[in-house]
Image (cartoon, rainbow, N blue to C red; front, side, top):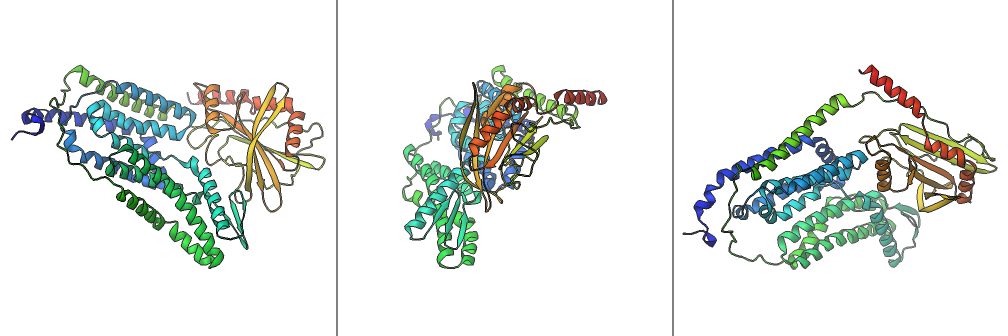
Length: 530
């Protein structure tokens, strides 16, 4: 019997040694890729293990391998050829990785390394193979630990939904930010109540289900949207039900149910509902004859056009791995430079300091900063606290922009609101973010901004970009400045303080440490190390 589409079985059999050789080359590239970027990959796995939100990422790669294995017959019936254009993509991803390392943007660094995996498949096996396994190659990006930036918005949606349902249920309720008050108690919609872990897991499973059970693209899109909306609605119902049980039944029962419902039982029930809906509208698989290209073959690796791109990537990975090993052994200073901090602005214009402020329990936490300052000032009956943290050099975990850096202790202060405040000084303008905080005794406002050289910023990305612009080929540096003041007349007090200390404050921001002493000390260390 002749195989489908009249393809000569001998033609397919002849290419098997070449297929095995090409697979061995891909395995070698994969090994070199793992060795070259092992620190990024190891950090990614550590995040999967340590943060429960990303625990589902452990299953992504096995699922991708299984989906590719299911396509093994189709893969044996398409032409295999090296794709030289993928070299441009790999070079671009490597450049992106370098920029991410330079700026300390961890998610960008991990994305660049993860994107190299389908790029290597494209390089080694070509267009037709990638077309057959396109979904598994894209599904691998669900292994990227990404999405925590959605937590504040999900908290807000959950809080608003819970308050609406409580009012609809006739329960007296008062809302203050993420805090929900009912008679006799208070609830907080914390970051663990945002439902982010179940949203990300449901989204990945929803995409997988849509790929397997639907063929029409609009149905796939609708089901993916459902896998996003359903976990958000279910999480709001969960929070509402917990408060209702607490209010009408027993607080101890509510606590036990919270641990039960918010665990894997809740997630299992959510996925079951999602899959039942999907199966109800699923499309039966259509049995079609295998589509085999008559010209299907595996191009020989003996030709330069096929073998040279693979060799260039392999040599690049080896050179990068050796350079990284050399840098770790010889290129890093093993001693820290002792920095001499310049003093904060002195008393002037009626502002006296240092004093003990009425809100002395407030303090920002930037634990890995090279230098920190905190100075309290007082004018008449008004109090003000000035805080700053400076990073002379940065590395992983020691960064100006990091999740461990906080502007207030959530156990002592509650965030009520935040907005943007602008201060004008002639032709110069200072843009700050104001956080309105409160506890049982005080209500304060915290004005903060990031300072990188002469650049000022508020957001994480803009600050990272300013660090790159300030020192394109050097080490990242920068500082954060925060001013805390009582909420009554807060803007006027901060404006008066900034105007009074304008010259001295700007001079200090331009040179927060004794740069000359730091350079001399670094030179001494270099001489001692030979």
